[in-house]
Image (cartoon, rainbow, N blue to C red; front, side):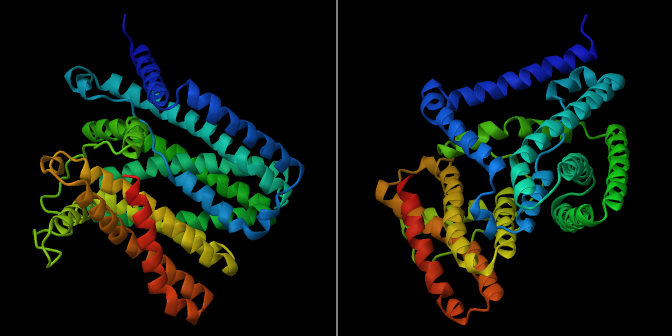
Length: 408
């Protein structure tokens, strides 16, 4: 006889089998033998050496950089709710079963976050212990703090997504992110100076987690949004792998009737030729997609935080590195557009596609590169750097886009 407990664990086992199959398609025995196993052996060797002696490159990394890593880790991910579209035919009529699946899902997500947090902090532990002089008790307290915070943020983000839509939702999330950033920094400072007050803040956070779990369990009318979120979470790894090889991934439809940018199909280039036409289609497709624009802004925001926390001597080097990385990332957007069903209807010549790829990738990466460079100029107060920012950015962007386009 099928029970709600058996149903949940069947879905949980099916989930792990599916993710294993996704990994298996990309990591066969040859990749594992010649790449993954040597990589883990080298990493393990370095990891053991970090416990014995702090690496010298930590002299250039302030503690705030590790706090940024912790903040991004706590913010990432979501709370899984194992509901499926077919449930509307049977389970949706059984409120008790739906509630029980949600409880099991919340419990599973909490346990999963505990393992993920423990793994993440075990990697950072030798740095915190050897270089930044954290005691073992303080590291354990940080693990507990990040674990509770990650669950709170996952639940809070879901409640915000159910309450707000569109730009108000993004504004609320950005405010949350900034507040949590200050909260994490303050909490770590209190851990080093006033441990009792830090434990009190942790207790308050634990109470908030209990309240959020209760609120999330009692939410009604969110079935279809939970199903969509669960499907996106399940396919995240598969989508990432498909994007890396240039396979078109169908995007979900937006509830907005008109896009925020480029609402009318006006021409972007006065000169009309196949290259400009293909570039124009790519730019409009990306800029009209809110998820692509949001991901671009988040990525630039992470790079900005890294530039702000690193010493002045390294800011220009980071700008060059992040400019190259940003160009490689936007190349994925080009792959999605050029492999979309509509664009594939036209017989594009190889030379046209190559020239359009170089131009489109260059234009998409340029705003972020210039913004990062402007922040570096303001931080270093370098007038020479300010004069050379635009031409240097153009040169770096052009040659990086040219190199990236050759891969496609």
